[in-house]
Length: 233
Ligand SMILES: Nc1ncnc2c1ncn2[C@@H]1O[C@H](COP(=O)(O)OP(=O)(O)OP(=O)(O)O)[C@@H](O)[C@H]1O
Image (cartoon, rainbow, N blue to C red; front, side, top):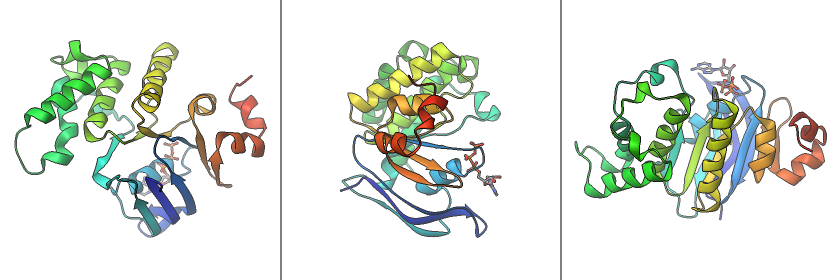
């Protein structure tokens, strides 16, 4: 059974659709990359899956033990977020808010969850630092730790490497791959980087004038030119 199923899904704003008739399934352990032109609706799709906005029509189902509040989300960074005046630890802990409800403090278990997530992302020494004083790569690790507090099952990542230099980008991809391989966390990632998508993903959802969903091999079969575009061998 799939963890996430989108059936005849149509997403958009104020009743006007941006993307129509999407059908795809994500299974435990998959690494799905969502690729497509600027403005094609990738972020809108992710926000709709997370329930941050309603679908225009169609259905989004979760299964295989995944509940909607167990999806970790790393949003696209905004200038405001970059300047957020809080400590690393506070930001990571805020990822636990999905399970602490209206309780105004964090439990021992939640503090442990945050400590483990920081350890995994190798940012434990930064715990007391102010978020806005960190480099772009360090900030992304903090946000990934925060997303990890919300889930052990599925991460939705909206362009997690945007604005990072090549070395830091490679490190970020390696961390995400490790979460997928070693911890079995399902990854759904929006990416502008087709070459990385083709390197790491198990499945591709290509949105735009033509929609494609399938395995990476099927994608390369259908769009053989993608390999060249992506810089592959
Ligand atoms: N809050 C909003 N209200 C109305 N229209 C919006 C809103 N946010 C985005 N749009 C429009 O929806 C369309 C899809 O935007 P979206 O951000 O989902 O695309 P994207 O594929 O993620 O783009 P990018 O690759 O540039 O991040 C665009 O035409 C955009 O102008």
